[in-house]
Length: 145
Image 1 (tube, rainbow, N blue to C red):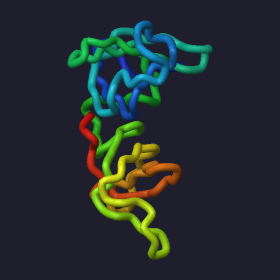
Image 2 (image 1 turned 180 degrees about the horizontal axis):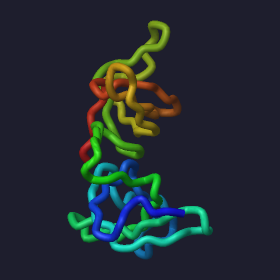
Image 3 (image 1 turned 30 degrees about the vertical axis):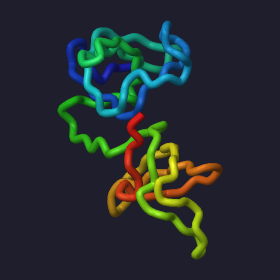
């Protein structure tokens, strides 16, 4: 296996990094690093002999986290961060209807379950109550907690 990044390279996380149970002091599933954050490669190794893991130091949070090679890109590479990421709490800006019936009222709280880049911009899968809806970024706003 060949490594893609060298020691000292600046890299960007392309998906949220959550605790898989290996970070002491953090709950399993807790957000460690938001996607789009940049850090510097400190070392690299392998996991189960088939995955390259980079130890990345994120200076803004002063956190050192293990990242799989497919979770990072060069910090110099083109990047579109989007507005939201998985797990973000959001508020619906507009009433959503299904077949003419109100399904979600304006102001309802939801949670981002998936992010995508559609042909016309960002598309998010949001769970409102017990249902999932695909909505554009303009239909939701981040809930400041």
